[in-house]
Image 1 (tube, rainbow, N blue to C red):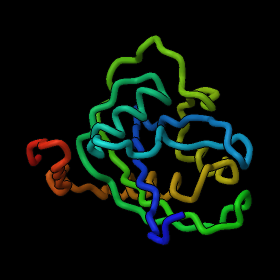
Image 2: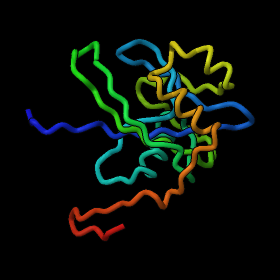
Image 3: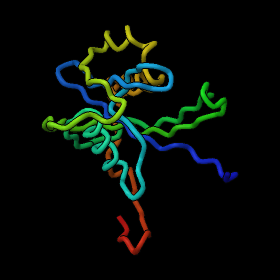
Length: 161
């Protein structure tokens, strides 16, 4: 095992339509929880590609990120492994595209559209405190342009982005 500490990089889509937010209900090691369409950054993809992919996989919708809502550092003690887990989450808002006829990712039970008040009422079922924090930041108007993100890759001679 490596002695190098590495946080898990994740992305999340903050999607609001007519005062309702798109959430997924998912099976976790802590039971059934609510979360935004979210997941881990995969090798060789940009953050924007990751959030579009995760939204497709978890919510069966196309998604085009247009702005960064926030970057969040979250640490907690895993009850399963009794070790500290660290996540660095990038939350995006954007344009919701067409729904597609494809199965939801393994562990995703269904998608839900919830009002802010419904989100507040279900807080104990949230995957993490970041679910509400991202929505609150979105509603507070926190935004940064995607140009703030810089992507560089020198893997296999890939051009600098």
